[in-house]
Length: 293
Length: 161
Ligand SMILES: Cc1cc2nc3c(=O)[nH]c(=O)nc-3n(C[C@H](O)[C@H](O)[C@H](O)COP(=O)(O)OP(=O)(O)OC[C@H]3O[C@@H](n4cnc5c(N)ncnc54)[C@H](O)[C@@H]3O)c2cc1C
Ligand code: FES
Ligand code: FES
Image (tube, rainbow over all chains, first blue to last red; front, side, top):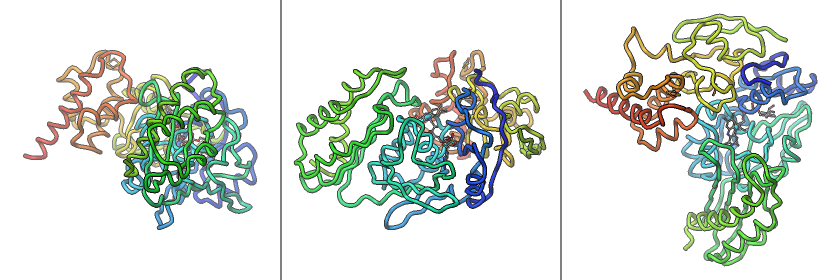
């Protein structure tokens, strides 16, 4: 193994439109999509991409890079670059947890290449952009020559590196509905240095109903085999009166629920322990941002 | 394995090259165009030594397949100075001693150039954050951050006069 050259041999294809790309996916075997390459090229160098005869570059497809706002929400093209997302003022005002997560990723010279769709399709349990999209109730738009289907972001992941995408399918866009009411959001990440992969990450998106929690969604990264959507614990908080003790209890509940592992970034014990405070703090922060006392 | 003819503009010069599908931009720049200012450090986007400009944006050339850079306008550290005259960023790096062994310097200078094009009036926190992917194993970063702020000050001064 070396990290200088790519030893694998493959053909390079660059479709100029989406239809052509979908045709290639349906006709050829062992095609890998190249968006920003910040996961794919690293893996090729590390020789951890066994099945690839073709690299299909999707950077010639303009519609995959677009962003479009409507009253209902935003549709982000799968190959929109992270830097274009984090510097978008409208994105920051509507979905601050998403832009905070993106800003916490890698370094500028990586974020200029990397796409949001690549972060999803690489399907790492630590993928930072995923939690916010899940918590905002985002939907993924998946296309193939057979047609288009929509999958809630929370149902996209099956296992590390594995998603619901079929062999002939690709991710084309991410739709996120506009949050309504008195909303407050928080994304927090624990990492060794600022450009590092997370030891733990957490997202909270809530809508306040006076002194009570209206709707709330929470997710965590780097604690399970896939990005973890805390569906039941979140649902249990709806309608509850917000207080410091509720925030602390929720931290304990989430920590108790997790079954993390030891890996090269940190230990299971650390993950469970720090989760308590991280959840309580993020909940308090999101609450304060929603205007709650 | 497929072969491709690509067109690049590198430091203002048009280049037409035949590349293999698995060749990387960093190797085309260093080994075929002899622009060895762009350094190979880690090969996996961790160190920033290979940073070049694609238009006004900085990218890690160790991660870019050369064929995917077809049509790009690239500036390497060699392309920053014009007619032998250093840019304000380069000058500040020299004057403030922001260089020790010099291995990280091309990547630092290129990334700092992108930074100042984007934000001509950065504060210290902004500079530190922008340069967080560029590693230096010698200087301890203090002089580098000062050099970028110094260059910003000079450029503002020049714009005001
Ligand atoms: C130094 C470094 C630091 C990093 N730090 C972080 C971090 O802090 N947090 C984090 O979450 N990630 C991090 N990453 C990982 C990476 O940058 C992100 O996951 C990024 O968003 C991937 O996007 P990409 O466009 O580069 O993906 P690519 O590498 O192009 O693709 C990734 C995978 O998804 C597939 N794919 C891409 N687009 C599509 C599509 N539209 N449809 C179907 N399949 C597709 C590809 O075939 C490939 O398997 C880091 C990477 C590096 C090199
Ligand atoms: S050589 Fe490219 S970032 Fe280290
Ligand atoms: S001056 Fe030696 S690595 Fe920075």
